Image 1: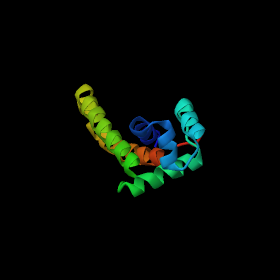
Image 2 (image 1 turned 180 degrees about the vertical axis):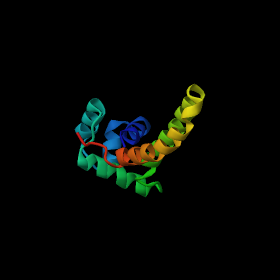
Image 3 (image 1 turned 90 degrees about the vertical axis):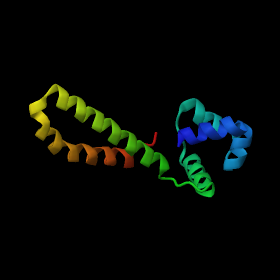
Amino acid sequence: MLASLRELVDRFGPVKGAEVLGVAYRTVTRAIETNTLTGRMEDALKLRQLKDGGTAAEPVVRRLDAIERRQEELEVGLLVACPRGGSAVGEGRGRLWGAARFAARTRPRW
C-alpha cells in the first residue's frame, strides 16, 4: 500500500494526492516520511484502488508470487547443493508455502 501512495504522490504531488485520497496533506507527508500508514490512509488507498479498477488484494498477490518464485529458486539451489536431500525439500515446501501465506495476511500495523 505504501508503494501505491508513493506512486500517487509521484504522479500528482503530495497536495493533489492528499486531495484525491480525501486526507490531509500532512497525513500524506507523514506516511511517506515514516513509511507507515494510518488505518484511515490505508482505507483511502484501498478505496482508490477499487475505484481505479484494481483490487486491494493485488499487492498481496504480487508478494505471494514473489515468495513462490524465490522458494523455487531456493529449492533448485538446495537440490544442487544436496542432491540426496530432495525429498526433504518436497516435504518442507507445503509448510513454507503455508507460512508465507500466513505472513502475507498478517502483516503488522505500526
